Image: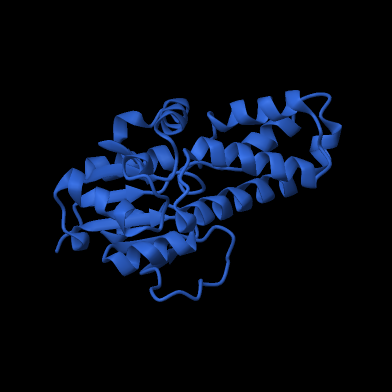
Length: 225
């Protein structure tokens, strides 16, 4: 079937999750953060994902905002940052994550091609609304889907079910794009055509399914259609 619908993960795919720590570290008086911001951002994201998986396995779901705060607390303690004001500033910046530079142009191209475009994310609805508004990309999106509708994090199949339920598509009509190899693999196993945006040049995850396409950024997405 022809691809009619392009579904994007949000964090790390459309939005640069390291930008909150980077932007704060660039501010005056942030010497301690400036020394460790890259490691902090990496640990923050890693623990955020780990906590989402563990909660999915145990059935103890909470909004992604809770997971995000817990992950930051772990990362700050790990890097010796005991600063409540810094914590609040970093969390505030997470609602305004910078989009990757190619994102607005890409989404505009896809809409010009007549494709349906949407986000499917672990993020809480209010978090996603803040990021989309801050990035100015809402006019290109037909929907912003949050796992809060089904109460479990990716890669649970119930999350991928949301696409067909919303748009009436068959899996073969969907291109699913994620910067997370495990997410792209999960979506591939579900039946979507998938693209893994492997910005870091990582090995392919050893999982039952593999991403259909591996890209270094989002610019070549239209060629897959």
